[in-house]
Image (cartoon, rainbow, N blue to C red; front, side, top):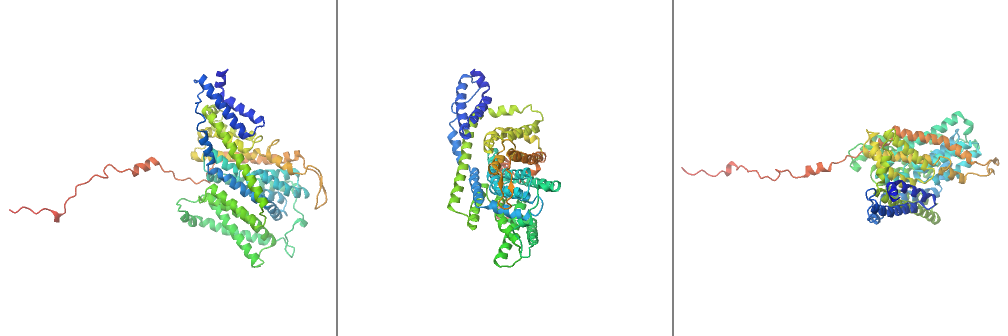
Length: 586
Protein backbone atom coordinates (compact mmCIF):
# COMPACT_ATOMS: atom_id res chain seq x y z
CA UNK A 1 0.00 0.00 0.00
CA UNK A 2 2.77 2.44 0.96
CA UNK A 3 4.64 1.55 -2.24
CA UNK A 4 1.55 2.35 -4.34
CA UNK A 5 1.14 5.71 -2.55
CA UNK A 6 4.81 6.54 -3.16
CA UNK A 7 4.52 5.63 -6.85
CA UNK A 8 1.39 7.78 -7.31
CA UNK A 9 2.38 10.56 -4.92
CA UNK A 10 1.87 13.53 -7.28
CA UNK A 11 -1.60 12.48 -8.60
CA UNK A 12 -2.69 11.80 -5.02
CA UNK A 13 -1.45 15.26 -4.06
CA UNK A 14 -3.69 16.82 -6.71
CA UNK A 15 -6.61 14.70 -5.49
CA UNK A 16 -5.97 15.88 -1.93
CA UNK A 17 -5.99 19.51 -3.04
CA UNK A 18 -9.25 18.94 -4.95
CA UNK A 19 -10.88 17.47 -1.83
CA UNK A 20 -9.61 20.38 0.25
CA UNK A 21 -11.18 22.89 -2.12
CA UNK A 22 -14.47 20.95 -2.24
CA UNK A 23 -14.64 20.94 1.55
CA UNK A 24 -15.11 24.71 1.57
CA UNK A 25 -11.81 25.53 3.25
CA UNK A 26 -10.42 28.89 2.01
CA UNK A 27 -8.11 28.32 -0.94
CA UNK A 28 -5.00 29.75 0.76
CA UNK A 29 -5.38 27.47 3.79
CA UNK A 30 -6.31 24.48 1.62
CA UNK A 31 -3.11 24.91 -0.41
CA UNK A 32 -0.93 25.25 2.68
CA UNK A 33 -2.60 22.31 4.46
CA UNK A 34 -2.18 20.06 1.40
CA UNK A 35 1.47 21.02 1.07
CA UNK A 36 2.24 20.42 4.75
CA UNK A 37 0.27 17.16 4.99
CA UNK A 38 1.79 15.64 1.86
CA UNK A 39 5.21 16.99 2.78
CA UNK A 40 5.10 15.07 6.06
CA UNK A 41 3.71 12.02 4.24
CA UNK A 42 6.44 12.24 1.58
CA UNK A 43 9.22 12.44 4.15
CA UNK A 44 7.79 9.36 5.87
CA UNK A 45 7.49 7.41 2.60
CA UNK A 46 11.02 8.38 1.60
CA UNK A 47 12.32 6.47 4.59
CA UNK A 48 10.33 3.41 3.50
CA UNK A 49 10.84 3.56 -0.28
CA UNK A 50 13.88 5.76 -1.08
CA UNK A 51 14.16 4.19 -4.53
CA UNK A 52 10.73 5.60 -5.51
CA UNK A 53 10.44 8.89 -3.61
CA UNK A 54 13.15 11.21 -2.34
CA UNK A 55 11.84 14.05 -0.17
CA UNK A 56 14.47 15.17 2.33
CA UNK A 57 13.78 15.68 6.02
CA UNK A 58 14.91 19.33 5.68
CA UNK A 59 12.17 20.10 3.13
CA UNK A 60 10.57 23.06 4.91
CA UNK A 61 13.67 24.62 6.45
CA UNK A 62 13.85 27.25 3.71
CA UNK A 63 10.11 28.01 3.87
CA UNK A 64 10.41 31.02 6.26
CA UNK A 65 12.92 32.64 3.90
CA UNK A 66 10.58 32.07 0.94
CA UNK A 67 7.65 33.62 2.81
CA UNK A 68 9.82 36.58 3.77
CA UNK A 69 10.85 36.88 0.10
CA UNK A 70 7.18 37.10 -0.90
CA UNK A 71 6.65 39.96 1.53
CA UNK A 72 9.71 41.73 0.05
CA UNK A 73 8.55 41.31 -3.57
CA UNK A 74 8.36 44.84 -5.00
CA UNK A 75 6.37 43.68 -8.03
CA UNK A 76 3.40 42.66 -5.89
CA UNK A 77 3.27 46.18 -4.41
CA UNK A 78 1.67 47.28 -7.68
CA UNK A 79 -1.49 45.33 -6.75
CA UNK A 80 -2.57 47.49 -3.76
CA UNK A 81 -1.60 50.70 -5.58
CA UNK A 82 -3.63 49.96 -8.72
CA UNK A 83 -6.49 48.61 -6.60
CA UNK A 84 -6.60 51.80 -4.53
CA UNK A 85 -6.53 53.91 -7.70
CA UNK A 86 -9.44 51.97 -9.19
CA UNK A 87 -11.59 52.01 -6.07
CA UNK A 88 -11.09 55.75 -5.51
CA UNK A 89 -12.08 56.52 -9.11
CA UNK A 90 -15.04 54.14 -9.04
CA UNK A 91 -16.39 55.34 -5.67
CA UNK A 92 -15.98 59.01 -6.60
CA UNK A 93 -18.61 58.66 -9.35
CA UNK A 94 -16.35 58.41 -12.39
CA UNK A 95 -18.36 55.53 -13.89
CA UNK A 96 -21.61 57.48 -13.67
CA UNK A 97 -20.08 60.58 -15.26
CA UNK A 98 -18.45 58.58 -18.06
CA UNK A 99 -21.58 56.57 -18.91
CA UNK A 100 -23.79 59.65 -18.96
CA UNK A 101 -21.39 61.72 -21.08
CA UNK A 102 -20.32 59.04 -23.57
CA UNK A 103 -23.96 57.90 -23.81
CA UNK A 104 -24.96 61.44 -24.83
CA UNK A 105 -22.23 61.53 -27.48
CA UNK A 106 -23.18 58.24 -29.17
CA UNK A 107 -26.84 58.05 -28.11
CA UNK A 108 -28.36 59.64 -31.25
CA UNK A 109 -27.11 56.75 -33.42
CA UNK A 110 -28.44 53.19 -33.40
CA UNK A 111 -26.39 51.09 -31.01
CA UNK A 112 -24.97 54.24 -29.45
CA UNK A 113 -25.70 53.20 -25.86
CA UNK A 114 -24.04 49.82 -26.39
CA UNK A 115 -21.01 51.53 -27.98
CA UNK A 116 -20.84 53.84 -24.96
CA UNK A 117 -20.92 50.85 -22.60
CA UNK A 118 -18.02 49.17 -24.46
CA UNK A 119 -15.89 52.33 -24.47
CA UNK A 120 -16.60 53.08 -20.81
CA UNK A 121 -15.92 49.43 -19.98
CA UNK A 122 -12.50 49.78 -21.60
CA UNK A 123 -11.82 52.95 -19.59
CA UNK A 124 -12.96 51.33 -16.35
CA UNK A 125 -10.78 48.33 -17.17
CA UNK A 126 -7.77 50.61 -17.49
CA UNK A 127 -8.55 52.36 -14.20
CA UNK A 128 -10.31 50.00 -11.80
CA UNK A 129 -8.84 46.73 -13.10
CA UNK A 130 -11.59 44.85 -11.21
CA UNK A 131 -14.30 42.95 -13.11
CA UNK A 132 -16.89 43.08 -10.32
CA UNK A 133 -16.69 46.87 -9.98
CA UNK A 134 -17.01 47.44 -13.73
CA UNK A 135 -19.93 45.03 -14.28
CA UNK A 136 -21.90 46.18 -11.23
CA UNK A 137 -21.39 49.89 -12.01
CA UNK A 138 -22.54 49.55 -15.61
CA UNK A 139 -25.35 47.20 -14.62
CA UNK A 140 -26.74 49.74 -12.16
CA UNK A 141 -26.37 52.74 -14.47
CA UNK A 142 -26.68 51.58 -18.09
CA UNK A 143 -29.02 48.60 -17.94
CA UNK A 144 -32.12 50.59 -16.79
CA UNK A 145 -31.54 53.14 -19.58
CA UNK A 146 -31.14 50.42 -22.22
CA UNK A 147 -34.30 48.67 -21.03
CA UNK A 148 -36.17 51.99 -20.93
CA UNK A 149 -35.56 52.69 -24.63
CA UNK A 150 -36.23 49.17 -25.90
CA UNK A 151 -32.84 47.50 -26.28
CA UNK A 152 -32.85 43.78 -26.91
CA UNK A 153 -32.24 42.24 -23.47
CA UNK A 154 -29.62 39.73 -24.57
CA UNK A 155 -27.63 42.41 -26.41
CA UNK A 156 -27.87 44.77 -23.43
CA UNK A 157 -26.81 42.22 -20.80
CA UNK A 158 -24.12 40.67 -23.03
CA UNK A 159 -22.57 44.06 -23.77
CA UNK A 160 -22.38 44.96 -20.07
CA UNK A 161 -20.89 41.66 -18.90
CA UNK A 162 -18.39 41.45 -21.78
CA UNK A 163 -17.27 45.06 -21.37
CA UNK A 164 -16.76 44.52 -17.65
CA UNK A 165 -14.43 41.58 -18.26
CA UNK A 166 -12.07 43.80 -20.28
CA UNK A 167 -10.44 44.52 -16.92
CA UNK A 168 -8.71 41.13 -17.25
CA UNK A 169 -6.73 41.93 -20.39
CA UNK A 170 -6.24 45.70 -20.71
CA UNK A 171 -3.27 47.24 -18.82
CA UNK A 172 -2.84 48.01 -15.99
CA UNK A 173 -4.64 44.74 -15.20
CA UNK A 174 -4.07 42.97 -11.88
CA UNK A 175 -4.12 39.65 -13.76
CA UNK A 176 -1.13 40.73 -15.85
CA UNK A 177 0.82 41.75 -12.73
CA UNK A 178 0.25 38.36 -11.09
CA UNK A 179 1.04 36.44 -14.30
CA UNK A 180 4.25 38.42 -14.82
CA UNK A 181 5.32 37.57 -11.27
CA UNK A 182 4.52 33.87 -11.65
CA UNK A 183 6.18 33.60 -15.07
CA UNK A 184 9.26 35.50 -13.91
CA UNK A 185 8.90 38.23 -16.51
CA UNK A 186 8.75 42.02 -16.47
CA UNK A 187 5.36 43.59 -15.72
CA UNK A 188 6.16 46.38 -18.18
CA UNK A 189 6.75 43.83 -20.95
CA UNK A 190 3.52 42.04 -20.04
CA UNK A 191 1.63 45.35 -20.26
CA UNK A 192 3.22 46.18 -23.60
CA UNK A 193 2.38 42.74 -24.97
CA UNK A 194 -1.26 42.87 -23.86
CA UNK A 195 -2.01 46.40 -25.07
CA UNK A 196 -2.67 45.70 -28.77
CA UNK A 197 -4.69 42.45 -28.24
CA UNK A 198 -6.81 44.25 -25.62
CA UNK A 199 -7.54 47.17 -27.94
CA UNK A 200 -8.28 44.79 -30.82
CA UNK A 201 -10.83 43.01 -28.62
CA UNK A 202 -12.53 46.36 -27.89
CA UNK A 203 -12.61 47.00 -31.65
CA UNK A 204 -14.12 43.54 -32.22
CA UNK A 205 -16.93 44.32 -29.73
CA UNK A 206 -17.63 47.63 -31.48
CA UNK A 207 -17.75 45.97 -34.91
CA UNK A 208 -20.24 43.42 -33.57
CA UNK A 209 -22.53 46.16 -32.23
CA UNK A 210 -22.32 48.06 -35.54
CA UNK A 211 -23.22 44.84 -37.38
CA UNK A 212 -26.23 44.32 -35.09
CA UNK A 213 -27.32 47.94 -35.68
CA UNK A 214 -27.23 47.32 -39.44
CA UNK A 215 -28.86 43.88 -39.48
CA UNK A 216 -31.33 44.30 -36.57
CA UNK A 217 -31.78 48.06 -35.99
CA UNK A 218 -34.82 47.49 -33.77
CA UNK A 219 -32.61 45.65 -31.23
CA UNK A 220 -30.40 48.70 -30.57
CA UNK A 221 -32.53 51.87 -31.01
CA UNK A 222 -31.14 55.38 -30.79
CA UNK A 223 -31.92 57.72 -27.92
CA UNK A 224 -35.05 59.83 -28.57
CA UNK A 225 -34.50 63.62 -28.88
CA UNK A 226 -36.05 64.31 -25.46
CA UNK A 227 -33.39 62.13 -23.79
CA UNK A 228 -30.52 64.30 -25.05
CA UNK A 229 -29.64 66.75 -22.28
CA UNK A 230 -26.68 68.70 -23.71
CA UNK A 231 -28.02 71.22 -26.24
CA UNK A 232 -27.05 74.71 -27.32
CA UNK A 233 -29.27 77.77 -27.04
CA UNK A 234 -30.33 77.37 -30.67
CA UNK A 235 -31.24 73.71 -30.10
CA UNK A 236 -28.22 72.27 -31.94
CA UNK A 237 -26.49 69.26 -30.28
CA UNK A 238 -23.00 70.80 -30.38
CA UNK A 239 -21.25 68.07 -32.34
CA UNK A 240 -19.46 70.51 -34.64
CA UNK A 241 -17.20 72.03 -32.00
CA UNK A 242 -16.60 68.54 -30.51
CA UNK A 243 -15.47 67.32 -33.93
CA UNK A 244 -13.18 70.35 -34.41
CA UNK A 245 -11.66 69.79 -30.94
CA UNK A 246 -11.06 66.12 -31.76
CA UNK A 247 -9.39 67.01 -35.06
CA UNK A 248 -7.10 69.48 -33.28
CA UNK A 249 -6.14 66.83 -30.71
CA UNK A 250 -5.54 64.21 -33.41
CA UNK A 251 -3.37 66.68 -35.34
CA UNK A 252 -1.29 67.51 -32.27
CA UNK A 253 -0.94 63.81 -31.43
CA UNK A 254 0.12 63.03 -35.00
CA UNK A 255 2.77 65.76 -34.90
CA UNK A 256 4.08 64.42 -31.60
CA UNK A 257 4.17 60.88 -33.01
CA UNK A 258 6.46 62.07 -35.78
CA UNK A 259 8.80 63.93 -33.42
CA UNK A 260 8.66 61.53 -30.47
CA UNK A 261 12.10 59.95 -30.87
CA UNK A 262 13.82 63.28 -31.50
CA UNK A 263 12.33 64.74 -28.31
CA UNK A 264 12.36 61.77 -25.93
CA UNK A 265 15.49 59.77 -26.81
CA UNK A 266 17.94 62.51 -25.71
CA UNK A 267 16.08 62.93 -22.41
CA UNK A 268 16.36 59.26 -21.44
CA UNK A 269 19.69 58.72 -23.25
CA UNK A 270 18.32 56.02 -25.54
CA UNK A 271 19.80 55.13 -28.91
CA UNK A 272 17.29 52.46 -30.03
CA UNK A 273 14.06 53.25 -31.87
CA UNK A 274 11.06 53.92 -29.63
CA UNK A 275 8.48 51.08 -29.55
CA UNK A 276 5.16 51.83 -31.21
CA UNK A 277 3.06 51.38 -28.04
CA UNK A 278 5.14 54.05 -26.27
CA UNK A 279 4.75 56.47 -29.19
CA UNK A 280 0.99 55.81 -29.32
CA UNK A 281 0.42 56.28 -25.58
CA UNK A 282 2.43 59.51 -25.34
CA UNK A 283 0.88 60.92 -28.54
CA UNK A 284 -2.56 60.37 -27.03
CA UNK A 285 -1.40 61.93 -23.76
CA UNK A 286 -0.20 65.10 -25.49
CA UNK A 287 -3.40 65.34 -27.53
CA UNK A 288 -5.55 64.90 -24.41
CA UNK A 289 -3.57 67.56 -22.51
CA UNK A 290 -4.06 70.01 -25.39
CA UNK A 291 -7.83 69.37 -25.30
CA UNK A 292 -7.85 69.89 -21.52
CA UNK A 293 -5.94 73.18 -21.87
CA UNK A 294 -8.27 74.48 -24.59
CA UNK A 295 -11.36 73.58 -22.55
CA UNK A 296 -9.98 75.33 -19.45
CA UNK A 297 -9.14 78.44 -21.49
CA UNK A 298 -12.62 78.42 -23.03
CA UNK A 299 -14.29 78.14 -19.62
CA UNK A 300 -12.32 80.69 -17.62
CA UNK A 301 -11.82 83.24 -20.42
CA UNK A 302 -15.44 82.79 -21.56
CA UNK A 303 -14.44 82.48 -25.20
CA UNK A 304 -17.59 80.59 -26.22
CA UNK A 305 -15.70 78.40 -28.69
CA UNK A 306 -16.83 75.04 -27.35
CA UNK A 307 -20.37 73.68 -27.06
CA UNK A 308 -21.76 72.31 -23.79
CA UNK A 309 -21.32 68.78 -25.10
CA UNK A 310 -17.67 69.35 -26.11
CA UNK A 311 -16.86 70.96 -22.77
CA UNK A 312 -18.58 68.18 -20.80
CA UNK A 313 -16.78 65.46 -22.77
CA UNK A 314 -13.44 67.16 -22.17
CA UNK A 315 -13.85 67.67 -18.43
CA UNK A 316 -15.26 64.17 -17.81
CA UNK A 317 -13.21 62.09 -20.25
CA UNK A 318 -9.79 63.74 -20.29
CA UNK A 319 -8.73 63.48 -16.58
CA UNK A 320 -9.00 59.65 -16.34
CA UNK A 321 -7.51 59.31 -19.82
CA UNK A 322 -4.51 61.48 -18.91
CA UNK A 323 -4.05 59.54 -15.67
CA UNK A 324 -4.07 56.23 -17.55
CA UNK A 325 -1.74 57.54 -20.26
CA UNK A 326 0.71 58.98 -17.74
CA UNK A 327 0.81 55.75 -15.73
CA UNK A 328 1.29 53.53 -18.78
CA UNK A 329 3.54 56.06 -20.54
CA UNK A 330 6.02 56.27 -17.67
CA UNK A 331 6.08 52.45 -17.44
CA UNK A 332 6.63 52.00 -21.19
CA UNK A 333 9.32 54.72 -21.22
CA UNK A 334 11.14 52.97 -18.40
CA UNK A 335 10.99 56.13 -16.27
CA UNK A 336 8.94 54.32 -13.60
CA UNK A 337 8.51 50.70 -12.60
CA UNK A 338 4.94 49.31 -12.52
CA UNK A 339 5.00 49.69 -8.74
CA UNK A 340 5.99 53.35 -9.00
CA UNK A 341 3.44 53.87 -11.78
CA UNK A 342 0.72 52.37 -9.57
CA UNK A 343 1.69 54.67 -6.70
CA UNK A 344 1.54 57.67 -9.04
CA UNK A 345 -1.88 56.50 -10.29
CA UNK A 346 -3.22 56.18 -6.73
CA UNK A 347 -2.05 59.70 -5.85
CA UNK A 348 -3.53 61.02 -9.10
CA UNK A 349 -6.88 59.35 -8.34
CA UNK A 350 -6.92 60.99 -4.89
CA UNK A 351 -6.28 64.41 -6.45
CA UNK A 352 -9.01 63.85 -9.07
CA UNK A 353 -11.55 62.91 -6.39
CA UNK A 354 -10.47 65.91 -4.32
CA UNK A 355 -10.81 68.25 -7.31
CA UNK A 356 -14.39 67.03 -7.85
CA UNK A 357 -15.12 67.53 -4.12
CA UNK A 358 -16.05 63.87 -3.77
CA UNK A 359 -13.22 62.73 -1.51
CA UNK A 360 -14.45 62.12 2.04
CA UNK A 361 -13.11 60.21 5.00
CA UNK A 362 -15.84 57.62 4.54
CA UNK A 363 -14.83 57.02 0.90
CA UNK A 364 -11.14 56.91 1.81
CA UNK A 365 -11.76 54.42 4.62
CA UNK A 366 -13.80 52.17 2.32
CA UNK A 367 -11.12 52.30 -0.38
CA UNK A 368 -8.29 51.53 2.04
CA UNK A 369 -10.29 48.73 3.66
CA UNK A 370 -11.08 47.05 0.32
CA UNK A 371 -7.49 47.47 -0.85
CA UNK A 372 -6.19 45.87 2.33
CA UNK A 373 -8.61 42.95 2.01
CA UNK A 374 -7.64 42.25 -1.61
CA UNK A 375 -3.91 42.57 -0.89
CA UNK A 376 -4.10 40.17 2.07
CA UNK A 377 -6.17 37.79 -0.04
CA UNK A 378 -3.49 37.73 -2.77
CA UNK A 379 -0.58 37.36 -0.33
CA UNK A 380 -2.21 34.53 1.63
CA UNK A 381 -2.94 32.61 -1.58
CA UNK A 382 0.65 33.18 -2.72
CA UNK A 383 2.03 31.91 0.60
CA UNK A 384 -0.27 28.88 0.47
CA UNK A 385 0.77 28.11 -3.12
CA UNK A 386 4.43 28.42 -2.08
CA UNK A 387 3.94 25.77 0.62
CA UNK A 388 2.17 23.54 -1.92
CA UNK A 389 4.92 24.01 -4.52
CA UNK A 390 7.62 23.08 -1.98
CA UNK A 391 6.24 19.56 -1.68
CA UNK A 392 5.18 19.38 -5.34
CA UNK A 393 8.68 20.23 -6.65
CA UNK A 394 10.41 18.03 -4.05
CA UNK A 395 8.36 15.08 -5.37
CA UNK A 396 9.47 15.96 -8.95
CA UNK A 397 5.92 17.01 -9.81
CA UNK A 398 7.14 19.28 -12.61
CA UNK A 399 8.73 16.24 -14.30
CA UNK A 400 5.48 14.31 -13.90
CA UNK A 401 3.53 17.16 -15.54
CA UNK A 402 6.08 17.34 -18.36
CA UNK A 403 5.67 13.61 -19.03
CA UNK A 404 1.90 14.11 -19.31
CA UNK A 405 2.48 16.17 -22.46
CA UNK A 406 5.25 14.03 -23.98
CA UNK A 407 3.08 12.05 -26.39
CA UNK A 408 0.31 14.59 -26.84
CA UNK A 409 -0.97 14.82 -30.44
CA UNK A 410 -0.17 18.13 -32.07
CA UNK A 411 3.07 18.73 -30.18
CA UNK A 412 3.48 22.29 -28.91
CA UNK A 413 0.21 23.45 -30.49
CA UNK A 414 -1.64 20.53 -28.87
CA UNK A 415 -0.13 21.50 -25.52
CA UNK A 416 -1.29 25.10 -25.96
CA UNK A 417 -4.84 24.03 -26.90
CA UNK A 418 -5.13 21.62 -23.94
CA UNK A 419 -3.80 24.25 -21.52
CA UNK A 420 -6.32 26.81 -22.79
CA UNK A 421 -9.18 24.32 -22.45
CA UNK A 422 -8.04 23.49 -18.90
CA UNK A 423 -7.82 27.14 -17.85
CA UNK A 424 -11.14 27.89 -19.58
CA UNK A 425 -12.93 25.19 -17.56
CA UNK A 426 -11.18 26.02 -14.28
CA UNK A 427 -12.04 29.70 -14.75
CA UNK A 428 -15.74 28.86 -14.50
CA UNK A 429 -15.26 27.51 -10.96
CA UNK A 430 -12.37 29.30 -9.25
CA UNK A 431 -11.04 32.86 -9.21
CA UNK A 432 -8.22 33.98 -11.49
CA UNK A 433 -5.89 34.49 -8.52
CA UNK A 434 -6.14 30.80 -7.63
CA UNK A 435 -5.50 29.80 -11.25
CA UNK A 436 -2.51 32.13 -11.46
CA UNK A 437 -0.96 30.84 -8.24
CA UNK A 438 -1.81 27.12 -8.62
CA UNK A 439 -2.02 26.19 -12.30
CA UNK A 440 0.36 28.64 -13.97
CA UNK A 441 3.46 27.76 -11.88
CA UNK A 442 2.88 24.07 -12.67
CA UNK A 443 2.52 24.65 -16.42
CA UNK A 444 5.13 27.41 -16.84
CA UNK A 445 8.26 25.16 -16.88
CA UNK A 446 6.66 22.90 -19.49
CA UNK A 447 5.57 25.89 -21.59
CA UNK A 448 9.05 27.40 -21.43
CA UNK A 449 10.50 24.16 -22.75
CA UNK A 450 7.91 23.31 -25.41
CA UNK A 451 6.54 26.58 -26.84
CA UNK A 452 9.73 28.13 -28.35
CA UNK A 453 9.61 25.40 -31.04
CA UNK A 454 6.11 26.62 -32.02
CA UNK A 455 7.23 30.23 -32.65
CA UNK A 456 10.87 30.03 -33.76
CA UNK A 457 10.97 33.66 -34.92
CA UNK A 458 10.38 35.04 -31.41
CA UNK A 459 13.04 35.27 -28.66
CA UNK A 460 12.48 32.75 -25.81
CA UNK A 461 11.84 35.52 -23.24
CA UNK A 462 9.00 36.91 -25.37
CA UNK A 463 7.46 33.46 -25.81
CA UNK A 464 6.48 33.42 -22.12
CA UNK A 465 5.05 36.95 -22.41
CA UNK A 466 2.97 35.66 -25.33
CA UNK A 467 1.87 32.67 -23.24
CA UNK A 468 0.91 34.99 -20.34
CA UNK A 469 -1.23 37.22 -22.60
CA UNK A 470 -3.02 34.14 -23.99
CA UNK A 471 -3.75 32.96 -20.43
CA UNK A 472 -5.05 36.42 -19.43
CA UNK A 473 -7.43 36.61 -22.40
CA UNK A 474 -8.56 33.04 -21.75
CA UNK A 475 -9.37 33.89 -18.13
CA UNK A 476 -11.41 36.82 -19.44
CA UNK A 477 -13.46 34.40 -21.56
CA UNK A 478 -14.12 32.11 -18.61
CA UNK A 479 -15.71 35.03 -16.69
CA UNK A 480 -18.55 35.00 -19.23
CA UNK A 481 -19.17 31.27 -19.62
CA UNK A 482 -22.49 29.88 -18.31
CA UNK A 483 -23.47 28.52 -15.91
CA UNK A 484 -20.76 29.69 -13.47
CA UNK A 485 -19.23 32.75 -15.14
CA UNK A 486 -18.53 35.30 -12.41
CA UNK A 487 -19.50 38.32 -14.55
CA UNK A 488 -22.94 36.79 -15.16
CA UNK A 489 -23.59 36.52 -11.42
CA UNK A 490 -22.34 40.08 -10.84
CA UNK A 491 -24.93 41.37 -13.33
CA UNK A 492 -27.62 39.06 -11.98
CA UNK A 493 -27.13 40.63 -8.53
CA UNK A 494 -28.05 44.13 -9.82
CA UNK A 495 -30.40 43.39 -12.76
CA UNK A 496 -34.13 43.79 -11.98
CA UNK A 497 -35.51 40.43 -10.82
CA UNK A 498 -39.12 41.67 -10.80
CA UNK A 499 -41.25 43.84 -13.06
CA UNK A 500 -40.95 47.53 -12.22
CA UNK A 501 -42.33 50.90 -13.29
CA UNK A 502 -39.81 53.16 -15.04
CA UNK A 503 -39.45 56.51 -13.28
CA UNK A 504 -39.08 58.51 -16.53
CA UNK A 505 -41.51 56.92 -19.01
CA UNK A 506 -43.75 55.39 -16.30
CA UNK A 507 -43.94 52.28 -18.47
CA UNK A 508 -43.97 48.80 -16.98
CA UNK A 509 -40.56 47.14 -17.56
CA UNK A 510 -40.47 43.32 -17.37
CA UNK A 511 -37.83 41.64 -15.23
CA UNK A 512 -34.50 40.48 -16.69
CA UNK A 513 -34.29 36.68 -16.52
CA UNK A 514 -31.17 34.63 -15.90
CA UNK A 515 -31.68 32.89 -19.26
CA UNK A 516 -31.49 36.27 -21.03
CA UNK A 517 -28.20 37.06 -19.26
CA UNK A 518 -26.75 33.67 -20.24
CA UNK A 519 -27.97 34.02 -23.84
CA UNK A 520 -26.45 37.48 -24.14
CA UNK A 521 -22.97 36.23 -23.21
CA UNK A 522 -22.76 33.63 -26.00
CA UNK A 523 -21.98 36.01 -28.89
CA UNK A 524 -19.25 37.74 -26.87
CA UNK A 525 -17.75 34.40 -25.80
CA UNK A 526 -17.38 33.58 -29.50
CA UNK A 527 -15.71 36.95 -30.11
CA UNK A 528 -13.27 36.36 -27.25
CA UNK A 529 -12.43 32.85 -28.46
CA UNK A 530 -11.75 34.34 -31.91
CA UNK A 531 -9.40 36.85 -30.27
CA UNK A 532 -7.56 34.13 -28.32
CA UNK A 533 -7.15 32.13 -31.55
CA UNK A 534 -5.90 35.28 -33.31
CA UNK A 535 -3.23 35.88 -30.64
CA UNK A 536 -2.15 32.23 -30.92
CA UNK A 537 -2.00 32.42 -34.72
CA UNK A 538 -0.22 35.81 -34.82
CA UNK A 539 2.31 36.01 -31.95
CA UNK A 540 3.67 39.28 -33.35
CA UNK A 541 0.55 41.02 -32.00
CA UNK A 542 2.20 40.53 -28.60
CA UNK A 543 5.92 40.31 -29.37
CA UNK A 544 5.94 43.17 -31.86
CA UNK A 545 5.24 45.73 -29.13
CA UNK A 546 8.04 44.72 -26.77
CA UNK A 547 11.37 46.46 -27.05
CA UNK A 548 14.19 43.92 -27.16
CA UNK A 549 17.04 45.07 -24.96
CA UNK A 550 20.51 44.28 -26.19
CA UNK A 551 21.97 41.52 -24.04
CA UNK A 552 25.61 41.67 -23.00
CA UNK A 553 27.68 38.51 -22.94
CA UNK A 554 29.25 38.64 -19.50
CA UNK A 555 32.05 36.23 -20.37
CA UNK A 556 33.01 38.17 -23.52
CA UNK A 557 32.95 41.44 -21.56
CA UNK A 558 35.25 40.00 -18.87
CA UNK A 559 37.65 38.75 -21.54
CA UNK A 560 37.81 42.23 -23.06
CA UNK A 561 38.43 43.79 -19.65
CA UNK A 562 41.10 41.27 -18.66
CA UNK A 563 44.71 42.46 -19.08
CA UNK A 564 46.56 41.06 -22.07
CA UNK A 565 49.60 38.88 -21.53
CA UNK A 566 51.94 41.44 -23.02
CA UNK A 567 50.25 44.49 -21.47
CA UNK A 568 52.87 44.89 -18.75
CA UNK A 569 55.92 43.69 -20.73
CA UNK A 570 58.66 46.35 -20.65
CA UNK A 571 60.21 46.88 -24.05
CA UNK A 572 63.79 48.17 -24.28
CA UNK A 573 63.95 51.83 -25.25
CA UNK A 574 66.52 52.90 -27.82
CA UNK A 575 68.56 55.87 -26.50
CA UNK A 576 68.31 59.13 -28.41
CA UNK A 577 71.19 60.21 -30.56
CA UNK A 578 72.01 63.06 -28.13
CA UNK A 579 72.24 60.52 -25.32
CA UNK A 580 74.80 58.25 -27.12
CA UNK A 581 78.06 57.95 -25.08
CA UNK A 582 81.04 59.86 -26.45
CA UNK A 583 83.53 57.68 -28.30
CA UNK A 584 86.93 57.09 -26.64
CA UNK A 585 89.81 59.27 -27.88
CA UNK A 586 92.10 57.69 -30.41
